[in-house]
Length: 391
Ligand code: FAD
Image 1: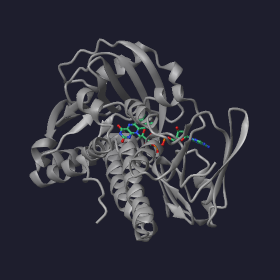
Image 2 (image 1 turned 120 degrees about the vertical axis):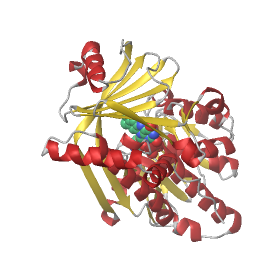
Image 3 (image 1 turned 180 degrees about the vertical axis):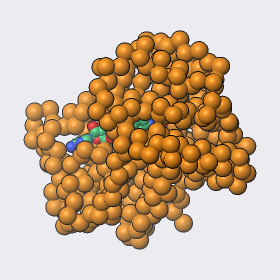
Image 4 (image 1 turned 90 degrees about the vertical axis):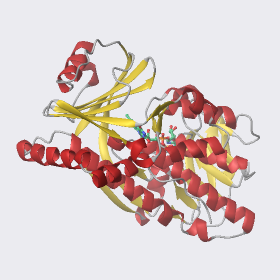
């Protein structure tokens, strides 16, 4: 088998890149090691920036996000027993959309299946070869048969635990920071208790209330690093959420828990995101704590920059965008890493010297929510930049 671009991983980065390349008629194959059911069922992100909505729309997969997505204009910050609002639409003229990551995945897979380009699920023993030369290839087994995919380029969109970043680890500079707490992530059959996302910074820890649809709520609760999700019964979850919302009018009545898991919080960046004929995109190259909801949006942004670079390479024979992919992508990535880290430091309980941290957090929250320029700056970072466009 031969193609121009081999894409490893059918998450948001891989499927988005595949869609953009297919639209540009650049042949590509997406190789995924999990099943279609698994990939379509994995519930993670939900807060979609205007840039991501624009890229999805312009690539022909925006119909459902426009009809089913929940458009948001305001965030609520609850601390010291009272709530202050930040209307980012009033400050920036832009909104964000709540739409589940798995719905974006379903939309991208449905669009992909209408193209002539392969999307292979359940591939086993995926390995990449000769990425420093002009004839890289991917080996894997599929449907019980050993396969070789020859290509011009390989793009590693295989997430944080994939195989592509380790392939070039000797040439990477890696930056990481592990936060001293985790999140208990809960998906529940429960109508949203508020029309807006609520960040509660309570003295016992963060609670983040958000939603995925009119009937499904998403709740994140800060907890310790060694937490076992099985020890979190429904009543324990709802009692802690209620405690962390104290001072607000809502009564948390709970609902059937669809899913609960522990999310490790870390910041991680690998530089450069390219070597020879191998490129990295999305979580394969960087991770942000989900406090500012940027991970999926960055994955889509990387895919968009790379797609423009491949369009220039194949359409105009120009290499400059391909060569500067990493430099362009990293500007946005570090901006979002910084913002996500700042949000994490602002809203969580820190056990060491907690009274001191708390006073700093309250001063910072008062500053951001009380001053026009600080609120403006926050709002612009929250909604994010417009998509990259090749000049
Ligand atoms: P992934 O989604 O990890 O996809 C990688 C794919 O590669 C997977 O399908 C995997 O099976 C496949 N793969 C792995 N290894 C191989 C292999 N060897 N061969 C073939 N395939 C392989 N982001 C936001 O923007 N907004 C949010 O609100 C938000 N909330 C989040 C909440 C939680 C609880 C979590 C955990 C994350 C959240 N994120 C959010 C982050 C977001 O989910 C990720 O950043 C996003 O999934 C990254 O997409 P990706 O395609 O780079 O990687």
